[in-house]
Image (cartoon, rainbow, N blue to C red; front, side, top):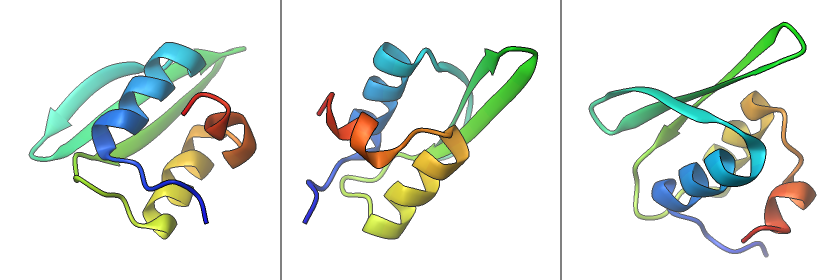
Length: 74
C-alpha cells in the first residue's frame, strides 16, 4: 500500500520536482499548471489532511505524472 499523502505534500512535490506552479485557489482546492512543449497541463489538488487513493491517482493522471515517478520524491 502506498503512503497516504496530504494535499500540501502533493503540491510541494509537484511544484519542486515536476515544475508545476500554483495558479489559483478556490476554497480548499488549489489549481496547478505547467507548460510543456506548447501544451498546458493542469491539475487540481484539494487541501485535505489525507488524500484518498483514488483522488491521489486522479491528481497524478491529470498532471501526467506516473505514480512510480512521484513516489521517488516522497
